[in-house]
Image 1: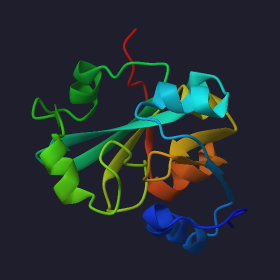
Image 2: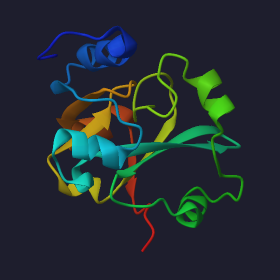
Image 3: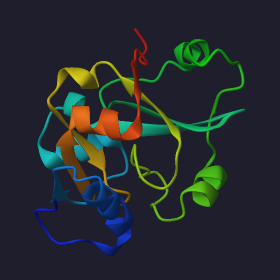
Image 4: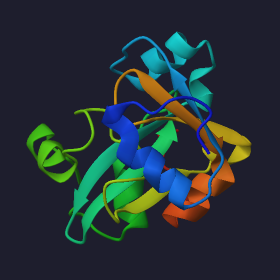
Length: 160
């Protein structure tokens, strides 16, 4: 359940969390445009903030969720999905697929039934911070709840 008031830009995400009976905390902060900036604004290590990178595949969108401190290894993702047809989604694709979310602030859940790949490094923490669909609000939830709710595959996504 929410522990603060709902902001109109991320109401849909919070409704989904409430409908799933997930415990979460809403944390407002100054506007940020990268996950590392988000971590700095929140005063937490970048390894505890998740960034969501939306990928296109022949099967649809995939959300790759990894620590802000890490870089996505697209070659690993292609191997995991057994497909060479995996690319970063364009801004135009993101705007069309996720109109409820600010561009560049797509969270790992909400706004569709995308496949989710969760980096194993995030699984080492009890909780994780994710963007709430806007650039000035984050949500903290249990990592296990995020993985279970999104039916995420926990894998190695990051560059070595």
